[in-house]
Amino acid sequence: MDIKTFMAVAKALPPEISICIRGAHGIGKSALAYQLGEILGIEVIERRLSQMSEGDMIGLPELVNGTTTFRPADWFMDACHKPCLVFLDELNRSTDEIRQAAFQVVGSHALNGNVLHPETRVITAINASADYDVSDMDPALMDRFYVVDLEPTVEEWLSWAKDKLHPHVTAFIKSDHKMLEHTTAIEPGKVYPSRRSWHKVNDCLVKADLIEDPKDARFYGICMGLVGSDTASKFVSFVSNLDRNMSAEDILNRWTKNKVAVKKLGNERFNILIEKLVEHSVKNTWTDRQVKNLSKFIDTMPDELKLGFWSALTDHPERTKMLENIKRAHKHLVPVLLAAVDGSDSK
Image (cartoon, rainbow, N blue to C red; front, side):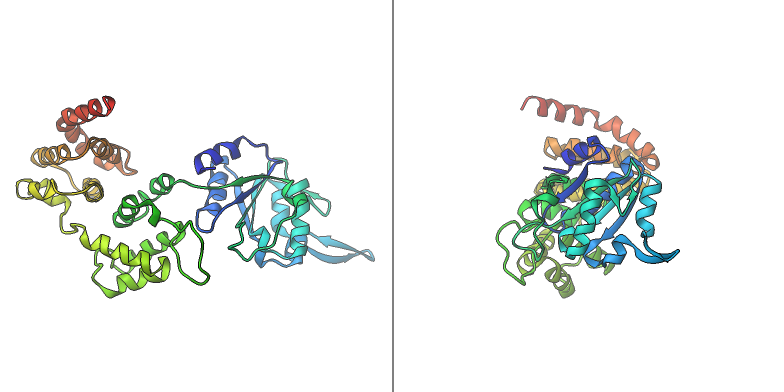
């Protein structure tokens, strides 16, 4: 199931139905729990069960009037007193004692006589295959869940990454979807790319100010340890071959000089220039001359990229800062965009 479908189903399920998300590492299972909590407007209480002892789950004993009783954990009582989303991560990496306690929580929404708030939801996320060092979850436990095998699409990841990762990273994945994550047999000990590791590659290269400098040996060194040597080599080659020197100013101010080079660009380079132009619009006010040059540049693109540029410009999170530019661009781009729409409709 892809992310969009899962989120629609998860919102529709009643709170008393616990959810088990199964899937490969690094695909965003944990992030989905927090996203669902935000959509529902409830606090997320996360507990990583692989790191918990029995007392962390069921509480600790206390002597009261000569008898022993258990004092429940604070996090569990919070979920009893108010609506929450209890996220029990790594259930199949926990001890037998923790799984037995979780059995009652996911099945009855209760533990040792304390009952969860009727609007509190329970979600767990697990890796489930022979590639992982995990324990089997018996049928009686699985029967207490709504179970989903999560398989996010590449397009969903690209949509998420659009405003979060550097254009070099997203353009590389757009050029070859197989580079996003490893999906075939895994060789023990070998480093492979994943959605999570590409996020780390992006953050490390950006923070080190290396994302624009693939010739620096550290660029490959960082990538190799996060996505593996084969993928790192391909990424270095891809970024090295991009026309990184072409800027938004080259389009807006020096179109006549650069128009021949622009016509030789592939889609991935167009996408990078689109993102540079949109970011330029956030910080600068375009002149009529610049917008005319922009129009000529947009006219050289495939139709789907023309429409993609307009969407990127008008849907930008900081579009309120760009209203003057959007108005001027609209005036000059209308003929180009209408022709693109007509071209798309006729296909």
